Length: 95
Image (cartoon, rainbow, N blue to C red):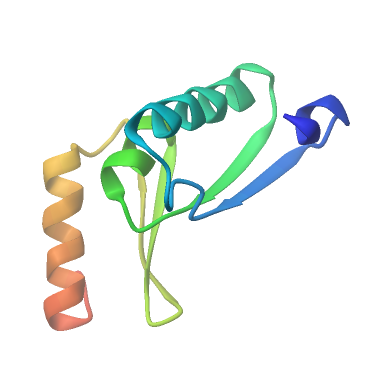
């Protein structure tokens, strides 16, 4: 909230749900939605695709520090995105 108060244009959240209860996680995800509603941008780094997908417009999948894929959530279902992520984990490629 301080970042929004001080009018930050971009907010970076690195594993923000780590160690949070379900109630706290819900509040955090609501906060991330509020960032977008406020016309600001956020980078949400997390291993939990369910959390990311629920608030993101775009997902960038990294594999060992390299971009393996980039997807607009409006263009891909969560199930299809997860399938692509499984493929990257197994083969190191989306092909």
